[in-house]
Length: 112
Image 1 (cartoon, one colour):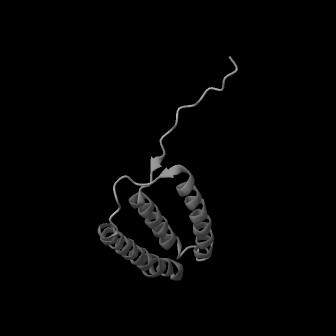
Image 2 (cartoon, helix red, strand yellow; image 1 turned 180 degrees about the vertical axis):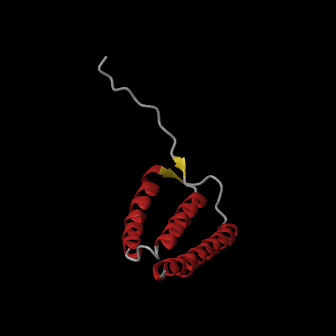
Image 3 (tube, rainbow, N blue to C red; image 1 turned 90 degrees about the horizontal axis):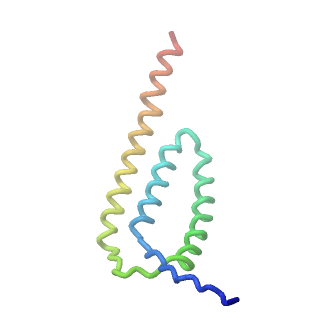
């Protein structure tokens, strides 16, 4: 009666590249929106991305299974580029608002 109980094998979760791309792009959006307010955040983000890369590489090799269906990089490349451009234009809009519209409004209030 002292036998070890064997736990049932748990299937590893399949690795999903599109999910990882979206996570990276959202981090990029937050970095761009933070840039006018906290420029040092760029250096902090580079360190955090370096650490996150090594953690994700460990998780990928240890806990994820090989994808069942092959990942077609040329299809996702178009979506990645469009989403990246969308975040870039979002940043330009935010940058314009912070440095031109908001600063002009503050100057008008300060002078009177």
